[in-house]
Image (tube, rainbow, N blue to C red; front, side, top):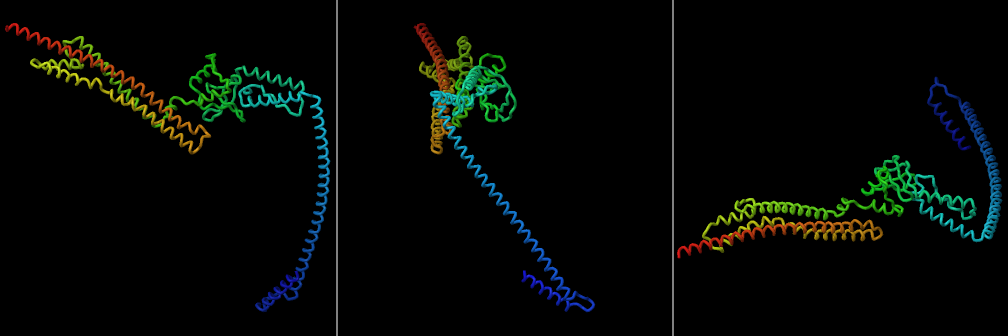
Length: 459
């Protein structure tokens, strides 16, 4: 403080000297005495302010010391009360243990009975807690009994009444309004039908039990036939309904079963190729079979009108070429010309059969290819993820099995189609050969009879 005062005085004196030397006679400045008086007044005012601050700090410290003393007193009282309460708690626990021991000695075998009842009630709550029995009704599950409390007659009667109501509720079909979340996530009130403790549905769609929010949700997929049955029952058009005694396990499996189109998609690109080749083979077989049916119809008409040869059927074309040969040919030449005409008609009758036969043989091989690729995908999944999750391997196994099934399904109809085409074409070729042989024999016999008659006439 002294150093500050000395410094302030020196600065004031220096300032006064500078002002004295720089001013003129007509610009008066304060005298040295006035400056000294102002300095002393400022020093006294600063000293007074410092004394006031020091007094305020001393007053605050006294208040803090008083508050600390009061807090220590309260802490000591609280500790004494805590010790008292802990002593009372220990005494009450000892008394409670004595009472429990006395109750066990008095009840005898009721303790085991109470334990069994508590275990059964716990199992019942675990089984029905996530089920349908309490949905849409005022029936509640029995409360878990306290292990330390005795089961008196009133509690046993209430337990029996609750079990009886649950049993009666398990055989009822209930209709009620409840919020239902659709597959698109929208929640709206719907009419729900609950069948005992087995299942519940709305508008033909199976539902999941409510969660913590109390909202029912639709399953991802309900089979079409089952959906129609449930919808008809809800609308009152039928008295038949499907239930699941396995608490929803069977219905859950049915909802996860893929449709026919989803099965087809599981075959992948190999399955698409198999189905495409099968469709091509069936189209070729149907077109050729239709052609053979038309040839057979025109051939029968030609047989009925054998004198009027037509060029719209193989028999008419063969006989026309045979008649165009004229007379004077050797029997061997006639037979060769006739075989040539038959061979010219045979490719038309057997058209498409090699392709259908080839596709029938290729389809199972492609199915085997899909099986191999599906197993490769399965082994890759096992290598990356292990065998802990079977769903990761389901894709490859599905592809392996579906492609095999598609290959067999494609090959079997193609084999039947190829057999039908072959039998039909062989029958037509047999008719042509038989009729052509008969015409050749008649021609040769007529030539022989004419030659004999000429020989007799010459003789």
